[in-house]
Image (cartoon, rainbow, N blue to C red):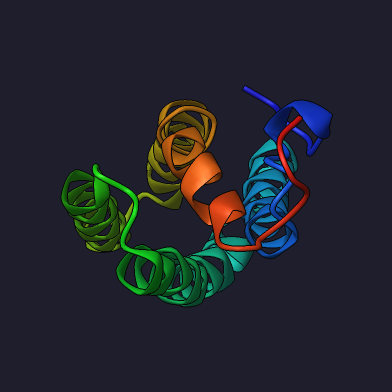
Length: 139
């Protein structure tokens, strides 16, 4: 399940790419803790950083959806954000006495989010954001 940041994840929107890169770094840190069987020590920090990331990144995207007004799937996207945030909160408390299982479930959730949301759903707003001066222009 290991993942690293590479060009295939970049959208060409520097603000968004930087935030997505941070998400990948959080996932890599969690995977490293799992590999070292050091989940108990690192998991609380990963959850804390992920909570801050979700608040900041989702807020960035949702602010631009509202500001630009050209992304037709904004409401579904916002609902997906809320569902992921709720899922992460649930995972934080679901396995309090089993940090190994909790870490694996969190890594799986983050990987799936990366694969299905960041790499797919976020691509839907690329053109809208570019039309409003973000990132490099599409050819």
